[in-house]
Length: 310
Ligand SMILES: [Zn+2]
Picture 1 (cartoon, rainbow, N blue to C red):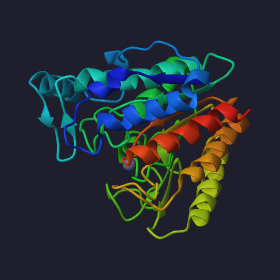
Picture 2 (tube, protein in one colour):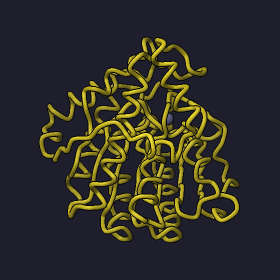
Picture 3 (cartoon, helix red, strand yellow):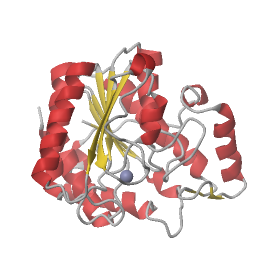
């Protein structure tokens, strides 16, 4: 089990903002206290190289983010705050996802968790959105296709928000199957069940909108059934997970009523899909989760399950 994280991700300063360095600080303190972090292997990683980044994001957008940060930052769009170091920190977040993907595709214990900031799944090819600058998971998926020759990658997104950026980037792609379960109707407004892909990607997007008030048991049941449907259609060679924990009942932004222990069977189900189809190859990448105590506990049970499951 590999863990990709760094104190450097704390340097994406956002001021009074729910996506704060305190999130990751609490997670890392919890993983150190419980001993889970010490049970993981660590490997070095750096900034993503620009060619890999620009396989997903437009050059003008990348340059605009670099310049905005270099000039001191501020609000890049309504919800997304940038500080002077944010561009480079975001390059490292994508770099961690890419490095984890490289390792997982080459080793015998092919499972990795990337605890990074800023998150990525709302970021579009040419636009920041919803606290996200660069789409870490999309960059990793495209890298797996371009550099490792993969033909089928499954992206599972259980963040409470629809992963609109990831969906948009692969909407016409038959190589990346995107499965998202999310609160509905809710930010960012996309993710209706009718959105299933287009062109050669038709049928390679699966959205499961869940209304507020849905019971935990019903949520889990819908998650498993759709995951199985996605896995059988995709038959993935690699599974990537947008692991947001803002569906937790205590989350101040999301909240779909889930409890910490729900993330144990959800994690197990994703591991089982990776084992059945992809030789166990799984990279989990942190997205949302804004109650820092709940987030730390959720990441704790998620990592404990990743460590446990054989
Ligand atoms: Zn979210």
